[in-house]
Length: 77
Image 1 (cartoon, helix red, strand yellow):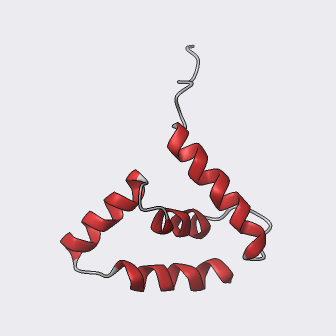
Image 2: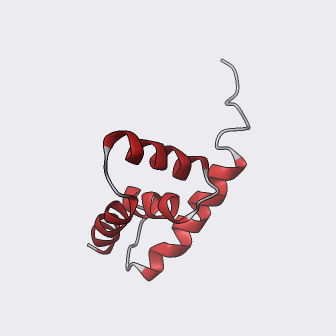
């Protein structure tokens, strides 16, 4: 059995996970949630995940600001 790839998660993902974990207290969450991670993806315009979300928004016809608002609501609940 081989070892796991040491490059997973990538430095970018590690940075984003750390940022999301830091926000968890602001949102009153005990655990890191997908909503908090998505919130960080939406905020960090340099992240590859943000760029993917921008492309999806353009292709699928939704607005990132509206998604951000929905994610904000979900992250607080």
